[in-house]
Length: 551
Image (cartoon, rainbow, N blue to C red; front, side, top):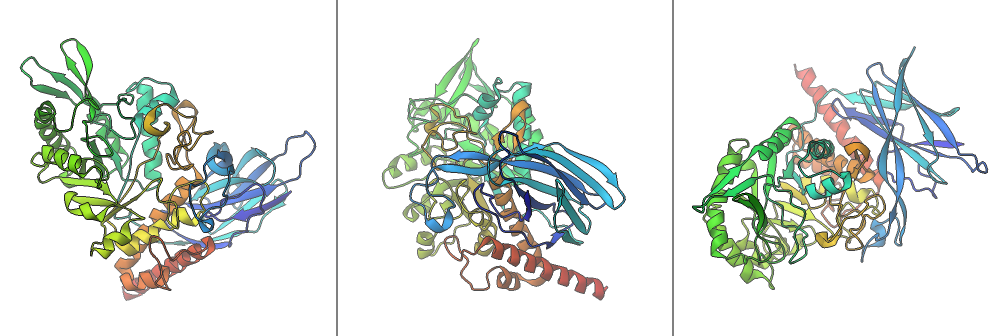
């Protein structure tokens, strides 16, 4: 058997021997220390290869191990670029992180943890290891093979959360379907909470709250499974009564797990704001569908409804959240072919949203003045800059595949993590991505098994639609991409922390020494990113030690 220590910014392919990691690393007090163990043994006929991994660390250490599982990548990219992807044709790629039971035993030198693993596929297999409070040394044994010792230096400082709004669209219908539970049942709520916890682990601090079913990625004329938090009743006099029991429960979970902002669903449909969002409203003894694709955005009856809905929502949410942390939407991407309908829909709610933060995705700078705060696609940023506009908010989705960061499974790890440095240099205040847990086909005409079909039925690039997996019993299995994108936001947090100690110019001198870093340029190797982060850590440590001496 051959076994290696591999860094946290490598995708270990079954057919390629990975590069061994640097074995002297630093961390901050509130950061877990993460690495991978890769192992390979030739087949033994029909006998299954299995082994025990033993990890020794400091007395206070806690160790978590997860097997990396392969998934089929049917659509690695559409156009893409060779530099940014590990494969260019359908293939099997590592992505799912499946927890394995990790047991603690006491040893004379500290804490010792072990897990039993089996070969899941031929070639190189791997285990992701997260260690909290690791002490100064970590030793690893795979079977009888003793690996080189990892030296860990802990910098005695706590890095604050990244100062940016990091939001993802959260798809509750997908969760109900994959868990086979009724919407808003206790089992559904548990799945939702588990997915929220995983979101916070990658520094997501804002989620879309489904006060009504978000009118997103829905085929014209169709309705997505209702996941409406508000229970709405229309009285005989035409007044609307809004029950918030479920919404209060949702907000309680956000508060419990440290979310600091929320997005309110779009008020009109995607791709032109031609129609209304879908609702279910009780009239008498029956709950019936209301509005939706059959109702034009400018319908008087919808305006009458919004005159009651939006003031209520503003008042209700402001009782639970800072009003400045509430983000409303009109509709996505006003463009030449739909600007008239967008303008008309916007006029429906302009007075009702006065004083609110309104954000909408935008790629065409010609319509910048129509959107209060444009969330600009990362492949359109140069067009905005040419017009003298530096976008405050950015996003990526299925279209941003060439020389850009994203969360596609086939991408090189640098394309996931480098986003953190990019956001720091640009000074962005918000980042949005649409697919945290979308387990539907494109346009929500059906559902997929995300372990086998990660491209929304062939409509998107593999990995675009989700970054976590629904596991048995309502649990969540995270992914390599989840860890690597999350590490990018930790990099952003460290840059911001460093700026308070040494100034912005010094930070940029470390992370962008050639002054080429941007959303579509300045790409470096994974090893170079790790080296730059280590240099940044060392500079922070030096500044902290200077402050101690001054005392």
